Image (cartoon, rainbow, N blue to C red; front, side, top):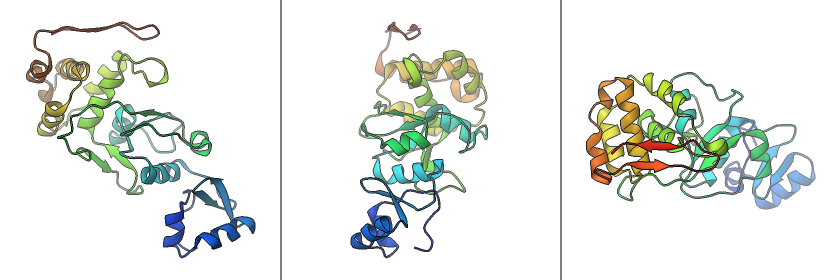
Amino acid sequence: MEGVPRGQPLDPQMLRDCGVSAQQTTYFVSAGWLQRLSKGAYLLAGDAPTRAGVLAYLGRHVSGLHIGGKTALDWQGGRLSIDAHTRFALWAQRPYVMPDWADAHLPHTLQTTRLFDDALPPELAVAPLPNLDPSILVSRPERALLELASDIGKRGGKGQALDEALAITATLHDLRPKVLDRLLSHCTRVKVVKLVRDLGAASGHAWGQDLQRHVDRLGPGKRWTSSRKGAPALNLKA
């Protein structure tokens, strides 16, 4: 099995691509050359899953999986490496039950909140980062900003503090206005659009100075409020 990536769980298709049949896989497990992590997931004997390896495996099995929100912004800004001891903000199109070994080796939250309408291509503003497996997709900063805004006001581990979001947004000097405009034009969440408007205005950057039209498209003249037990109250102007 030459060329098999170290630290990356292998699924049956990857094994077949390496010339290993289902029958041979069973033999290699019984002979101690492969570890069976869970149904459809194997690892070379003596190896341990790495974070990059887990992400690459999940990227092949979870529809729309990508790293988003604060984690994506930290990566794009060079403030975080894949080996940092942090909880990864993962986004996907639908819920997925993570195998125990993935939970053990990749601290994470999984978000499935739908932010955009069906007309937006799901791959827009999502791309692999250099020097990582191409199946590990990361939100570009414009999309990650909307995901960050979505997390503000949520309870528990998925929640994002507003003051930290303001500090992060202040560092986003180079957002592409056309990409941000397209994302906001397809966003269906009033809360997200209003928060991006407010974060953009507070940042002082040029890209954040003309976003009210997106709020008007969704809810002109309507104040958005949220007050839930265990979550900070939000009161967003019209």
